[in-house]
Image: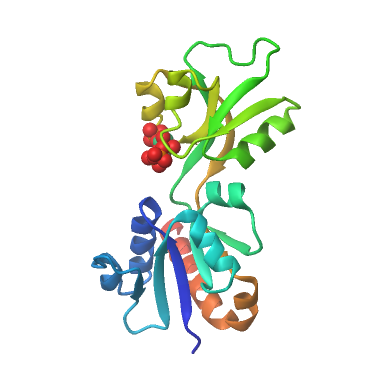
Length: 213
Ligand code: PRP
């Protein structure tokens, strides 16, 4: 049996994915007690789990050093790449939105607006789709700070509960896209390790059917 290497996005998606794997019957003890280890075996299987940052999950899968990846649609929309997106896993749900200081009438006026974001490609595509010229400033985190400090008129960012926006005097102006965790597969692996990959996908699908039945 071929070895399957799965890259998991560290953090929020990691927990939900481990839970899913456990519900499928996989022994995830090594992943749960990983310490500082980054490559973890799933006991009594041909599966190995790798923990990585979201962008790196895509890089590893694209380059074929991991066969499968679990990554947010936000990262896929920003990075793109050559791989198959095979499954919407249904967890890690949130949305991309344009947000601005409460009551600011963001779309008024003719001056070029400045947008701060961790996702410049997503923001650029969104405003291009509206034929709206904007300046985009790339920020690495806590993007909500940019309009507060006066660096930008608005942000394009992930909204989950809306608490961060609310507590910082911002509001959603417009929704950009829904986001959730996706399973991606390397193009060559899909051919070379078809039975192993199909077995995992079938397990996930029948588990979900069982849940909704
Ligand atoms: C994300 C996002 C928002 C926040 C939204 O940030 O960029 O800041 O979560 O969540 P909420 O709607 O539930 O408040 P993250 O925690 O990933 O940190 P970062 O901004 O430093 O990247």
